[in-house]
Length: 377
Ligand code: CXF
Ligand code: ZN
Image (cartoon, rainbow, N blue to C red; front, side):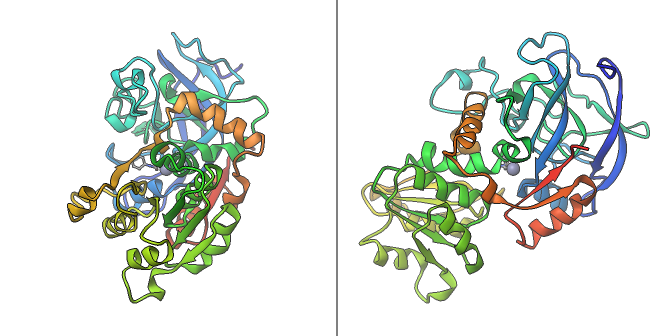
């Protein structure tokens, strides 16, 4: 290919500073170095984490940066030492990598690869530099992925090859939100056939958790949200009961206890709010109830009465739905292609890269489930 080994000039959405809309810029993307691959991004979802980092300035790598981490693309070229990928392969970037060599990758109990962006092991790339620049100024990468760019460079531990026929403008969603919610139900909660579940928060992650409960054979799935407009969508994914906490004077845990003869078997918190986390735990049945933290928040503390756990409940959480990313994402792609999981139903909007700020705004106001940015031109 004509671009191999050369700097590629392309369009990217650059977040120059917190709380300011991103700017579509021409950036320069350097060739991949050892153990890296450069990909052409075809599609990317917009996730709350992009929003959170952009508007609250919490991108731990700082600014300016190219955000985006829920993408899918095609390999353009590979750096020295890369044998797993070749140009033309369809791939999904993995903000949670799987190096297969660290203590955590070798243990079947966890997916928390120690080489991952989330473990602070590579702030930008394989080394501490970045492959992006704009008018001579280095632009940082984000979550080891940076999918709001026509081209990006990834460490090979943070990318996985998927089926050649996979529709990238759908399976990109498996790079974050859908895997996170779906896996929370099937891997972390380990929802059982015939069980009663409650899902708190019906954004994309919560709806994916509902889908996980349904696929695991739950007999009742209680969808909880203060926005009743979300209930119709939750029904499509398998929710059977719908509760708006604002419509009740009693605490939601009491409402659910009355509905379920003492509490649900499994609850999933998909909001990222300490008070909701506590309610989700309190909504579980004593003796065996399991409550899973799925929604992200960086609050320092959250609380519950010890009796909640002494009474035999389990409180746990997971990142990326507990999925070991390289092992699982290609299988999830096949699950979608075979109709075993839904993805189309999450997509409420499709936009181009130059509309990325509109997509962010839509997410901020709760006006979408998922917006797909289509970069293939
Ligand atoms: C993120 C939340 C912040 C930590 C890394 C994973 N989840 C999805 O966007
Ligand atoms: Zn995300």
